[in-house]
Image 1: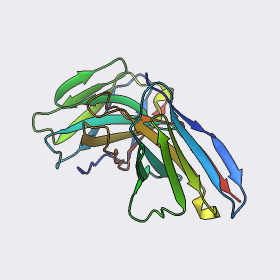
Image 2 (image 1 turned 30 degrees about the horizontal axis):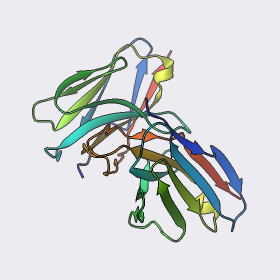
Image 3 (image 1 turned 90 degrees about the vertical axis):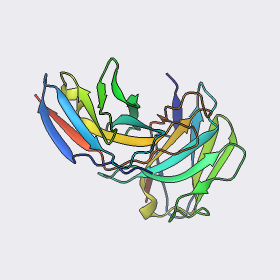
Length: 117
Length: 111
C-alpha cells in the first residue's frame, strides 16, 4: 500500500527555537496533504490543508505565522513550528491523499513527537 | 461535515467478536464511511471503507444500513494487539477534503 513517511519521529527542542517536520509520500503523488495535532488522550485536530504549489489553508485558531507549511512538490510537505514554546509540545501527524478521482484513501505518517523544553 | 458519534470505550476478551457502532445522522449523499485504527504514538491506520450495505476485507467487516445514518465496524476474534482507538470518519470521496476525526472508541482487549 501507499506509504507516507514523517521525519523526525521525535524531537526535543529548546523554547524559542524552530523545528521543521517533513512529510513525504513515498510511492504516490499527493496533491493535498493535511497536518494534524494530537494532545494526549485526545483525538486528532486538523491544523491545516496544503495543496501543492499554493498556500496552505489553516483551520480557525491555528496561527499561520507560527506553523509554517510548505508544499513545494507532489511528494513533500513541511511543517515548521517557529519560536516553539512548551505548549506546542504535541504529537504532529501528516496525512496525504492522491489526486481527485484516484485512490481516495488517506494515508498517515507515523507522527512526530515534539517536546519543547 | 457530518458529525459522528461513537462509544467512548469498549472492553472485550481475546477471541470475541467486537462490534463498534457509529452514528452519522447528517451524512451527505456523496460521503463515504471510513474506519481507522490508531495505536499510541502512531499515525492512524486505514481499516475499511464503504458507502452502503456490507464491505469485508481481511481484517474487518463494515455494515451500513440502507439509510446510512449509522455504521458498524465488526472485528472478528479480537486479540490483545487489537487494543487501540478506532475512529469512524465520514467524508467526501475526493482527495482535497480533510478527514475530520471524532472522539473515537478506545477498545481494550483483555486476555
